[in-house]
Length: 187
Ligand SMILES: CC(C)(COP(=O)(O)OP(=O)(O)OC[C@H]1O[C@@H](n2cnc3c(N)ncnc32)[C@H](O)[C@@H]1OP(=O)(O)O)[C@@H](O)C(=O)NCCC(=O)NCCS
Image (cartoon, rainbow, N blue to C red; front, side, top):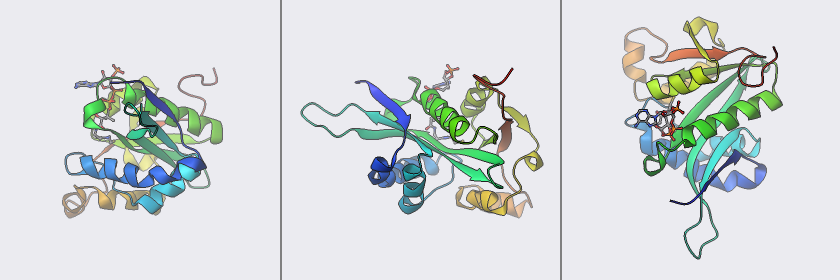
């Protein structure tokens, strides 16, 4: 397997939105992750609010294939930022791409909105550990943004009906990283 490029998205990458939605769909029946349409993801990508992992083109080709993805969103007048949709193609897992994508999401958020509290919702022990290594800590869900639009994202998760029937909001653990904390944070 060749070298994989991991970087922040730019407007030139908008055409990868379909591939990003397909990657999320590929894992959504077995993982707790919100599905998004290509049009919705295209806006994230164009705004520089996504992390891309691009595999080396096959011999003779010049198009890199999207093999990993993640995006971020701002809430409540930029007071909060959520990291979502972290996904690596099954053939490319276990070699650090998830961590590199998270590093890009972290750096992109800190550069664009340094005063925002970062948030992550997850049921994945792997993602939880990854988040913890950046300084994220688990908090009650009411310490996350209360913006209803953020919580509407859960409606596309495979567990939504069951969670709603229990009268709960979400089956994930909520994690936050306040401004100034984490790698390179203010002392
Ligand atoms: C979560 C996911 C993005 C991780 O991608 P990845 O490229 O395999 O991640 P990495 O190789 O960077 O590994 C991340 C951490 O998990 C650990 N890990 C990787 N593969 C593992 C395995 N098979 N068993 C146990 N731990 C493992 C690594 O040790 C690493 O921790 P470290 O950096 O402290 O060593 C990927 O598994 C995935 O796409 N899952 C499905 C979608 C999903 O659930 N997304 C999260 C929604 S919140």
